[in-house]
Length: 228
Image (cartoon, rainbow, N blue to C red):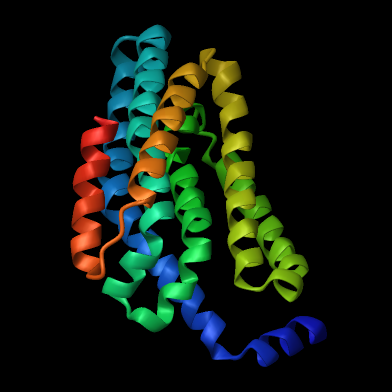
């Protein structure tokens, strides 16, 4: 803790502010976009399991994850392109440097947003104690990652540690669902969304205007049109 404390003291509160601004921006998106979708998923698959059984539940979960990826992937890439502009508008220009961690944080939160879908078997089988154990492991891994990475990479290391810990959580909760429901990941669909999303990113990344609000509006319209 001595080395970590010294590094943070040297960096000052500015880096904490940059990380907080970038994290809050990413968290707003999760609350607006992810929460309504994921909160509706669990009651539906619980009802399907009770009334129609395994096959109907599995198909619903696969379709739900595919739909989630359809929206989550372009959001990650869109924020990667416009993170600086958004921070400028929401916080101020002095927080624009936090753009470097926005893609990592939004990716981490979007990955974590898939947990209610991928952990379906733990809810169906009433094994939420196992989910708590997975969350505990993830928390410890995140803390260890911060202790190792922050002294060397600053807030970028904190963002990478969070993404890695959430990816680990998703991996852990997916295994029981795969075994219990024979759940299949929609890899082909996700690769397609990623390819189109990267092309969208390349298009909107070259759009520049002096006014950040004009630039954001142009990127949003162009990105939605291109991705659609």
